[in-house]
Image (cartoon, rainbow, N blue to C red):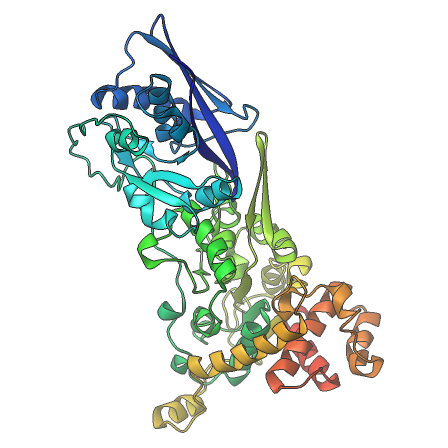
Length: 526
């Protein structure tokens, strides 16, 4: 007997770390020891693997089995190590070619009958293994299409332990008797069954459904063209949610690199359908206002998992009825809005998830929603109105580029829409304008790490993109009067550049700056 080896990957956030699995099987009192900081689910692999080996005719009875996961200082979690552990044990008994098992990535959860079940996070795991020079991946058949999205890696789909043995040149082992549970593992303990995937342009409806709301439509077009955050305030039924849900439909498709990054997040979250290939449509997430901080920002008791802000990476995060969200959720948005990532710190380590999304907030003008125009129908006291508005803190609002008031739809607008004489804006029309503006921004930002105006930092706006003093004078006056912070000034300049791109100009003018200012201050001054 000798020490058998195989490879697997430990995911910490979206970062993968290559793990060498070592197994030593020696005569002695029956025992099964797993070392290397396994969590509860991984520690329980002792019983799963032993039963799977026995039912596959590869039992290690009357043996002492010691499994080590190296590096031992790296926390490891989940059942995706089961196949790697089983392969290392079989290799230690010369049941397959040791060199073949030692050079291949192994992912998958084992059932007690020896059948291999799918797991989450296969795409980021295979990407991490490839970056370490691994060129062969043994994965569950149900995850094979997902693993095949990674180029330059040979994917070996397996359904049971016999397939794993044959993949490494071992003697044929008959498949165990299939249990009554479906072999694809749906509904199984791995949690790999797919949930509803991210929405995209095909699910978003059309802006032609919107009646009236010319100002709000214009603000939505600017938000899409520059990747800006948007707050819409107005009474119930004015169309705020309708507008927000249609934003993904006018955004350009993701680039290949962005698609891989977004798909990896959804693979880890369990919301990815590999039969559809990479996710090239911007994702759309709309958590309910009762969602917890862990559900929105990420985290969890069993290990850090991506939240809604990460699932919305490179897409849209809609917080409908934003003031109703828990304050911890709202204040927790500050970091991803600034840095484009979420950092979740735990006692056993820190996980990082990408979270560069467009935030769209909707809010009523007051708790009853009727404090519009003269507010004669509003039943709220001034104190209630102030308390409601204070639920959106100044630091959070300072990070929102566009704030637009959405007025109730008038009968005149409704009649015009029914007669077909009103202004008709379709998603296809807006998408063309957005694509043209984004191309102009991409040309200007070529050679930088930023892809749209909403990502450009202040140092670049005040450096290479510095505007003449006469152009920025309206914003500077607001800065001097204390109505704008320096962060707010940067966001005004970003919007001004987007307005110029939409108009086909090479640089913004003072009218663009004033227009950007008019969209930034309504909620704060109301």
